[in-house]
Amino acid sequence: MECGVKEALVKSNYALKGCGRKVGQKAKVLVIDDDPDILDTTRLLLESRGYEVLTASGPEEGTKQLEEGRPDVVVLDIMMPHGTEGFNWLSRLRHHKDPALRSIPVIILSSIHEKTTFRFHEGEADETGEYLPAQGFIDKPIDPDLLAAKIEAVLNRS
Image 1 (cartoon, rainbow, N blue to C red):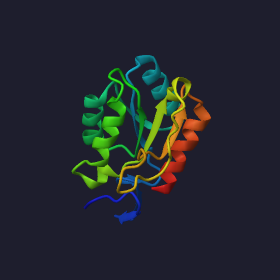
Image 2: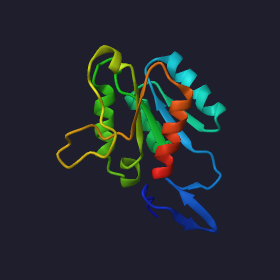
Image 3: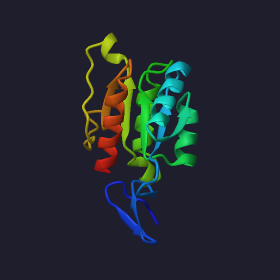
Image 4: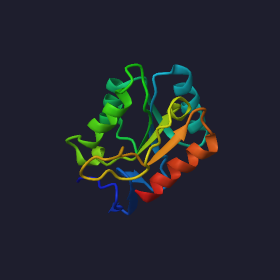
């Protein structure tokens, strides 16, 4: 049975949320960041808040973790070594052949605001692709409470 992010499913007396997560079950978060210190810190932060955390140090590993781990939400560093890797990864995710993966919410984690005046639009992309299809943005350095609040907000919208 396909999992729709925008609907709750019921199976075997368990209310399911997201991509097959049972009520009361830890949400699974995939964190993709090329900085090992930030990756480890974010993992520890999220685990301390009760999340199951998958990590990836780059786009290829992120895709593998996405397809094998089927997270409920992705926290993505948008600016990785080649400059556009995070943008390209997000675009590939939104065009993934699997509709359940394609619709996983993404929270962007980046220090791009410090380096440019670029601002992200949090929301759904329209058919023209006029803005980045992400559901949240967190500036580095990470505010733990804000990150947890953003994750909960996107999980509750799913």
